[in-house]
Amino acid sequence: MRDDEWSRQRAEAVRVQGERLAARQDAEHTRAEAMLRDFVAAADAAGLAAEDLQVQGYGGRGTARTGLKGWYLRVDRTAGVSTDGDFYVLTAPIGLLDRVRGVRPEARRPPLTLGAGGKDGESMPLADVLDRLLPGWRTH
Image (cartoon, rainbow, N blue to C red):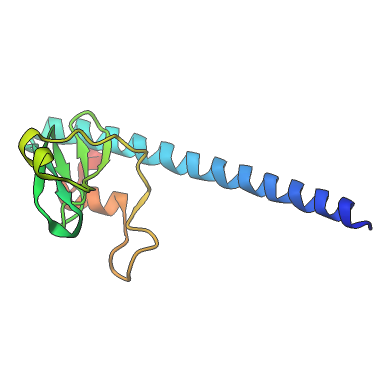
């Protein structure tokens, strides 16, 4: 097999593997989005009070208002779900003006596991996180 043919086959294999990974990640995000929508509906039906979500500065350097209402998904308040079912990472570089004016974080596609790839004990399945917030939410 010639080097250029081998290189072409490897490049094709990498492309196919990348497409498979992207499809798997998209399917996981889609499942997590559906889970958050179901949770928000159950939380609303159960009367679970939403709170004002805030963004924390990197390294714990202050907080800023977001104008969003919802629930914190992590005890350290670094992730949340809005009452619209959107997922937010609630850490950012914030300055003095951000603390005064507030910030508007961008919604992100939610993961099925919060903190995946982090330190031991920092990752937790999204379903378990939602169960902690509203036990039995799947049956509401």
